[in-house]
Image 1 (cartoon, rainbow, N blue to C red):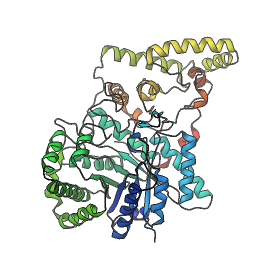
Image 2: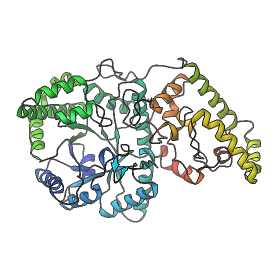
Image 3: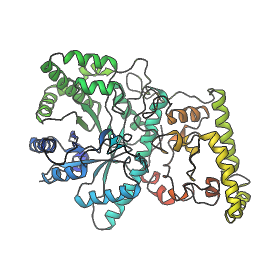
Length: 513
């Protein structure tokens, strides 16, 4: 009989256990047999509600989670498929989603995804046609179509969040994007990995503050020295293992059996703390060889469950002087009022100049909006005039923004910075989970563009710009055309997004922090 993850998540009495499995690079053989054996043993154990199947983790090629997931689904174990935006465009994503629906695998963890890794003949092209917010909206649209066809069960979609951001800007950006994911229709949340109980609590307090209470699974992991080093170095985007914890893990594993026991104990203690804090369940990672270690963790959790308050102080591995939006006793303190706090001279000039131009020339409430539309229609009908305008636009925007001529400008959503040139993942709805100390996941020498957006919007008292609504994806039909004309003629994402908006904020009523 199929174990149904959706039902377990909706059951108020059940503490949900999910298990992350990573397909290898082969289609048959030991790696496939091991993953299926772990899933089979998890189903037989009875305490695991579903296994999740990763989607080319690290951006590197692996067996499709859809293929091996279908084999596990046939065993009776429910499957959550990781669904990233990295490798296919919106057409491929819709096709894949329909395939998953036909296969019966409707639990989806919608992710922007790690940056593209290396495959055949070198690095793959990073697609990122959608981000995780617009993917949520796509799946919501498809769910309506599934229901209309007579199937009562649409997709049950989850989203990820990394509470383990220790700068003010990154912390706000994570929760701002989470708000948009929830507006887009996310049904549940899975956190990234950290070892800081106060940050785990911070996420729940944030959800209380905005008045939305989806079920939340907290990630736990069986730390080994190899993985701890990778996470400490920032090689696993969104996961945080501070220096102090790394050194502790290395000392424990000087004797392998002692290290293994310590890893089990740490995982079990974090699991019961999450249950005590009010998490709906835990998401266990780091299981690669057998289900036996999961059995030991779950058995240990049953033994120490009532002792969870005594473990909270032990789970406090965090960078020094990190930012928190909650007090030590768990009260929401929020984000400081940065209105009027000075930016650097160049950044201040850049922001005000572009904001001023936008308010005069690209605002439908501007007194000259009507004449600009009329002039745009005249120019659009004349090829030579279009070329002259496009040239003038490109020169100015290249100098100011390193413009990539997408034809569907979104600088106003990112503090008047270009998401096409400024973000390797082209995100228009908020930060990915991979930034570290304010630096870009892909180009650590650069500041994350959303860190900069926070600074600008906070200075101007307009932080709601990072939360309100969901930003539609780029319209590729407009590539290499004039975004000025496209705005005034109603062709860009700002004018053609009524259908998209229907799948965003209108889906949930909630208050803002």
